[in-house]
Length: 380
Image 1 (cartoon, one colour):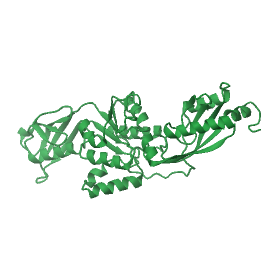
Image 2 (cartoon, helix red, strand yellow):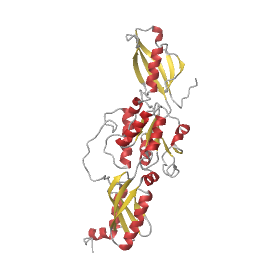
Image 3 (cartoon, rainbow, N blue to C red):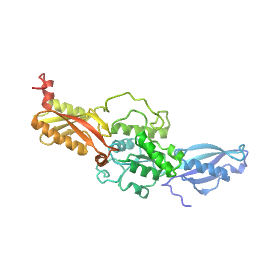
Image 4 (tube, one colour):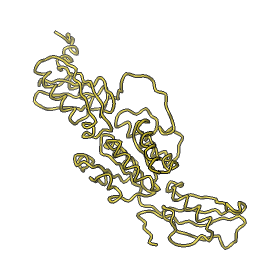
């Protein structure tokens, strides 16, 4: 059987024994991470079966491992084996090119992964959107096995735009001995997906090994925070640690009105320009409340100038375009207003979000800021 180093192999050596022949010491076998033996012979069928199971389930996480294994028929017989992996470079495969994928690519590169992004939409699967990614692939999610090789060096994060695509990806990937497999989603969605896959005959034990919801419990809300949460779980799986996964933990949340994000450097620049900018008429748009899946949360802001320029972002896409047009109206009328942005499931899919949501955006002329900042009244 041909050895393919790109798919990963392990060289297994017997280095210890109890109540077994001395000739066993030093025996070697080469195994694929599918559990198949390729070359060599460990000399004992029960030993080879247990080694194959370790590799097939990726119990070593693709890392060097010592294991002492006992003969089920004669427990007094045991052998200690050294499992030495020969794997291609670790790869982070992100299925879905939406808002979370953008910061996750950056963090993945910082952690040393070769990063691949896959999406089935040309607007989301191109190098300009992911300049740091090693590969960006545009294909149907049903074709991912034709375009990519999955193995013990692969960490896969499923963050597509909808339940159907998530389920399609999970169904195809669960059979592989991956270093990490995680899927985003609410607990309700995950329970639905799990039940459907169980009814299709997917093994319950394999489903239990999937990280869903994906990430560590750090209270993440924004796309950037969710990316940090996912990366932290990847690191914990690789290095070990005791932080709680969302999969295993139901955190108690402090009640808040909507989701609020920490201000970015650009948000602060928007505020600075609002107070001290040029004389071009402008309006500032601030997200005050969100519901469901939105690219940015309360506190994010964008400055819109009468000449068409903008500074900052409230998430991009169609929703931002709507607010930009509304802001031009506010500049003309010199009156503030609340603008409602509704992201239907279809719109959310176009903009790369997991599901639909809604935003309330307060839009006001910059003069209101300037008047109060320089000691005047904010209203006439």
